[in-house]
Structures are given as structure tokens and as C-alpha cells.
Image 1: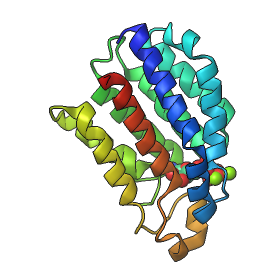
Image 2: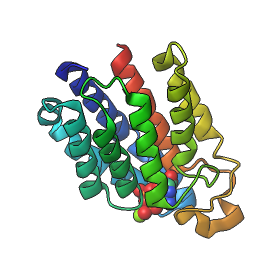
Image 3: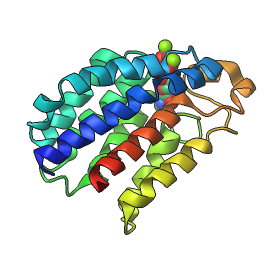
Image 4: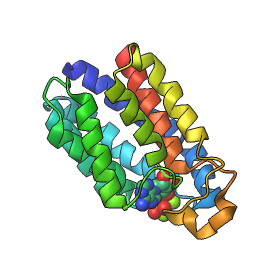
Length: 198
Ligand code: ADP
Ligand code: MG
Ligand code: MG
């Protein structure tokens, strides 16, 4: 990945999160404390402001630095989890990004450990794990197919009952709403694919 490509990914992802902050907040108002959009916007405003600096770093260091920004700025449950995902990916990925599937799998394993969570609990993992599976299956034309895979996975959280995170306090009343973190994971996935595909 060239610094230009990395810059485009960072800016496209940050803009997507910032543009969808209200939608993420509305989802979190339904089954959480209504701050997911604001939390994510705070983190990605900081990342966007540093985009040029971040994109100039080798890929492993860039991912680690973005993860650290997210941990420091987002707060809530999602900050440490997204931060962990990126910092673990940064440790595993090669400078050319060729081992993205293995690096992403390492990141997802770190999220599971940090969150003490698994797919099926109505969290971001319900999107991250299907993405991990698609990456390791190495289907052709992945950048074009991943957004739909991620979106379908986010929609599949609607009928789930949350058993992790704040939404679990609602028990069965969490059923019928998309998980905010699943939604943000899907929109970040779509933005990464868009930036790499253009
Ligand atoms: P908070 O719940 O602290 O207000 P956010 O609203 O920013 O934090 O993020 C909530 C999202 O974090 C949830 O929608 C869910 O996807 C994710 N989440 C929360 N707890 C966990 C966990 N233990 N494992 C995985 N994801 C989690
Ligand atoms: Mg919240
Ligand atoms: Mg909160």
C-alpha cells in the first residue's frame, strides 16, 4: 500500500464515521446510552486531523498509531475495542499489507479477549467475525463483496438479544434494533473498500 492509498483510506473512513455520527447515536439511543456516534466522531476527528502524519508511517506503525488515537479519544466500550483491533493488526501486519487476512484475524482475536465476547452477543464482533471469515476464504473480488457481507452481518444483529455491553441491560428489549457497534463496523468496512477500490 502506498502512502497515498493509506491516506485515502484514513480520510474516507474518518469522513464516513463523521457523516454517520447521528445515525450511530440514534441506534445507541435505542439500546444503549446514546453516545456511540459522538464517541466515534471524537476519535475519527482526531485521526482525520493527523491523516497526513499517519499515512507517512509504515503500515504497521500507522495502524498502531491510529489504534492508540482511538483508545485515547473515543472512550466508552468501543474505543478500547476498536483501538485493540487496530493495535493488534499493526503488530501482525507486514509493511506491504499482504497478510491482511491473518493480521485481521489476530485483531479480532484481541477484541474477543479484551471484550470477553464472542459473535452472537449482538456486538461489533457479529460484523468483524464474518469479515474475518471472508478475508481468510480469500474470495475473488473481495473489495466489491465485503461491504454487502458486512451490511448483511450488521442487519443480522437486529433480531439478536444482547448479552454483552450496555444493550445487555435491556435483555429481550434489545431485540429489534441494530447494534450500534455492528453498524459502525459495517460502515468502516464499506469505506475501506471504497477507498481501496477507487
Ligand atoms: P458505551 O457502550 O460504553 O457507551 P459505545 O456506545 O461507544 O460505548 O459502543 C457501544 C458498542 O460497543 C456496542 O454497540 C457493541 O457493538 C460494542 N461493545 C460493547 N461491549 C462489547 C464487548 N464486550 N465486546 C464486543 N463489543 C462490545
Ligand atoms: Mg454508548
Ligand atoms: Mg457510553
